[in-house]
Image (cartoon, rainbow, N blue to C red; front, side):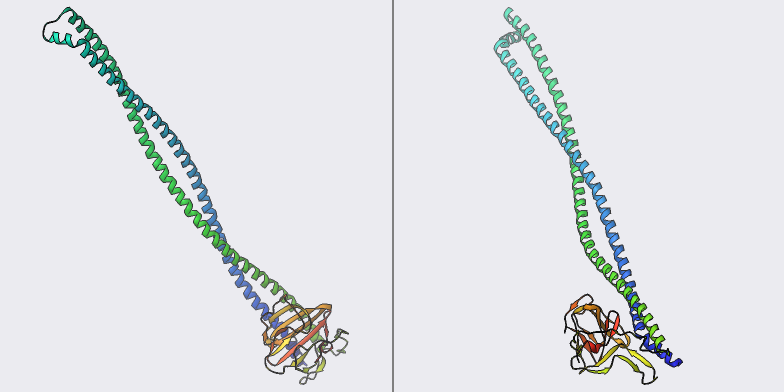
Length: 390
C-alpha cells in the first residue's frame, strides 16, 4: 500500500512539478529582466543628469552671452559718439586752418598793398613822414595779426590734442569690442556644440526609453505569468492532495468526483482521423489494481505531425511548454464557461499566443503520437466524448 501511495503522489503531482519548473524558469527570466531593467534605468538616469548639466551650462553661457552683447552695444555706442566728436573736431580743425591761412593771406596782401613802399624806404634809409606813419601802423597791425594767429594756433593745438585723445579712446574701444566679439563667438560656438550634444542625448534617451519600456513591459508580463503559475500550482497541489486522498480512501470513489453535465450538440474532433485509446472516467490501474479517475481522453494520431484543431470558437488563455510528459499545452476558454485543454503537443502553431481569439477548426499545433484532450464546464470536468464527435 505504501508503494501505491508513493506512485499516486508522483503521478498526481506530475503536472504540479512541471508548473514548479516553469515557475523556476519564469523567476530566472524575471531576475534577468530585472537586471536589464536596472542597467537601463541607470543609463537613463545618467543621460538625464548629462542633459540637466548641459542645460545648466548653456543657461550660464547664455547669461554671459547676454552680458557680452550689452557690453558690445554700449561700447559701440560710445565708439560712435567718439567718432561723431572726432568728426566735429576735424571740421573745426579744418575751419581753423582755413581761418589762419585766410588771415595770413590778407596780411600778406595788405603788406603788399599798403606797407611795401614804407618798408622799402626804411630799408633804403630814406624814410618820409608818411612812411614812418605807415611803418608804425604796420607794426601795430602785424602785432595784432600775429596775436590772433597765435590764438588760433593754440586752439588748433588743443583740438589736435583732443583729437589724439579721441583716437586713443577709439583704439581702446576697438580692442575691447574685438575681445568682446571674440568671446561672444566662442560662447556661441560652445552653446552650439552643447546643443548638438543635447540632440544626441535626446536621441539616445528616446532609444533607451523605448528599450526601457519594452523591458518593463516584459518584466510585468513575466511577473503576471509567474503569479498565474503560482496560483495554478497552488490549485493543482490542492487538487492533487484531494485526488490522493480519494485514491487511498476505502470510501466509494464515484461519490467523491463531481462530473459536469452537458446537453448541447457535438462538435468536431480535435484530431481528425484519430482513434480513442484512453477513456474519461474511473479505471483500474493495470499494475497496482487500484481505481484512478481519468479526467481526460487520449487520442492516437493517424500519423506523426498530425494537426490539432480547436473544437469551438474561443480565446486562448494558456499556451506554453509545461515540460515533462505533458509537453506543450494550450488552454482555450469558450462560452458557457467551458474550457478545452490540449496537451502533449509537439509544436504550437506560429500564431498561437495568449489573448488571441480562435475560431472553430483553427490549427493550434501538431502531435507526434498522441493527444491528451480534457474539457471542463463550470470548473467541473466533463467527459470530452459528450462534446466531440470521433
